[in-house]
Image (cartoon, rainbow, N blue to C red; front, side):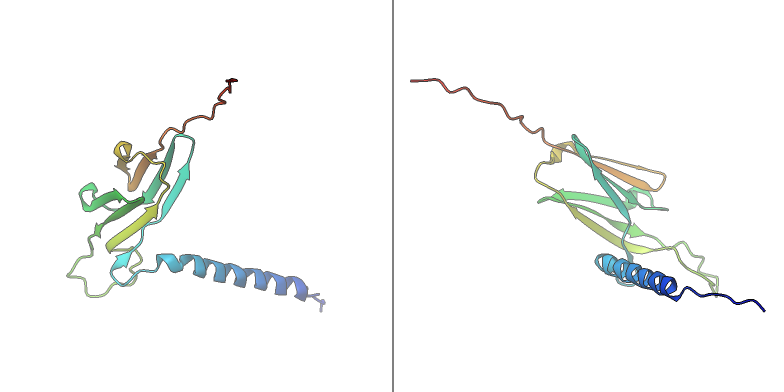
Length: 146
């Protein structure tokens, strides 16, 4: 019979790390809790010197079922994803895909040019580009004597 040496401190630290991650994820997801029949699309938002770009996952949606509104420093994506389950089926074993209405709002800074916003929907991903207002560069003003 062989003796197995347990590393209980390492196991305990691993468990603590897993529990911390679980609580962090649950707190982060509090802002995306939805009611039954509602869902919240996942988004990526990034920016560079010229624009802020938002990409939202909207799989299985038709472009016509997506609305995009902007105003007062907020961009709102909303719509409804229709249930495509066959009604004659008596028993589903698993339903994991999300259906129903959705709404996701994102605030942005005042340096966005609203009239230049562009949106494109392709392969289940909505991409919205919010161009930034060109910032005036700082220049030095010479001071002359009177």
